[in-house]
Image (cartoon, rainbow, N blue to C red; front, side, top):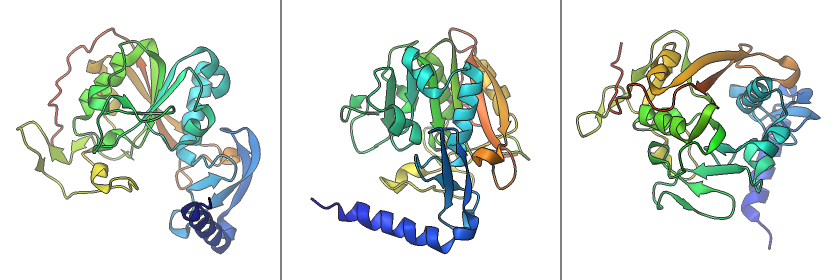
Length: 274
């Protein structure tokens, strides 16, 4: 049977790629390990170029860069002997590792039961209340996820719980280099209070699931310390692999589990607007 939706999507991407040919770049993709063309699909975001082979974006190429530099192994080699959990079902890592016995992935589908496997490849999980056993994984990966979590510090604590001792959490979030972390929505009074205008990011499955609850800033590593993480910001800039944020380094956070349990977690923590 012809998948007309997929044909339409591919045709549309080819059309936009042809329109913005001057913004494409050649290079080496550090995710799929191939010479490639990094394709620009829109002039307004010309630095968000996707590998024509694995469809990785600069953010995911930066995540893989940090993972491989931290572990000293390629992603595929690391996955052979270590358990990995990723909080998405649409990434290049998912496409490379799905079916690997050491790899688990999950989506967030609020209209379906959490804690169940939706198919052979991924789960439906709420990061605020993961159903995996404690100390299950050597590495957890997420990209542009935690800003959408209603209680982000509870989500970070759950990631901490499912990591093995000295396990690593590598993630990206929209990061504000000129401010401290602020909550856009206060959640500690039993109901949500919107202290800043509502902002949504693109979610093709359920747009209402993409509300931004938190704007993360320069104090994020400090805020993760009471949870039991030693976190650091790593800035990755590699023009050869087209890892850049509009000619600036791409910001990736590396959080290492340093204690067995959260030191002083307040699940209702809401950082006030500065």
